[in-house]
Image 1 (cartoon, rainbow, N blue to C red):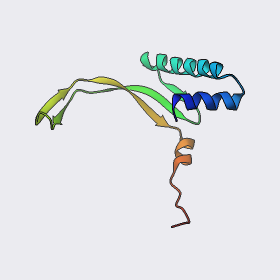
Image 2 (cartoon, one colour):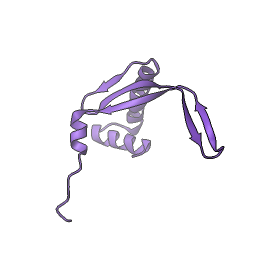
Image 3 (cartoon, rainbow, N blue to C red):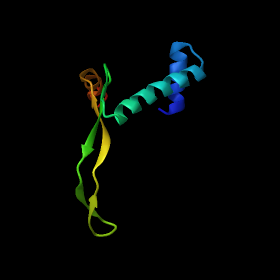
Image 4 (cartoon, rainbow, N blue to C red):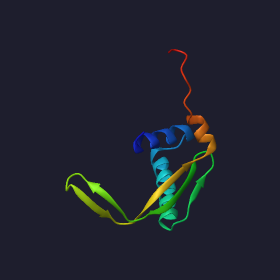
Length: 97
């Protein structure tokens, strides 16, 4: 799904204009981004929890240089799906096989 598809779906499901849907989605994303930048987690029931974590400095092999290089520490976004989302995504075998 693309950003445009998301706007179309929100617009259609809430019977609002695409412009209003875009503003709503942008606001939600801005708040989510702001909270993560401030190192606060965001928990959305039924979806999961977004939080930031710091990856430590590490050495990795570079095939291009054929040597180990040092990767500096960095902050990344971590997502943990909710239990209900995990349950909905479980693989179910098809009877067609």
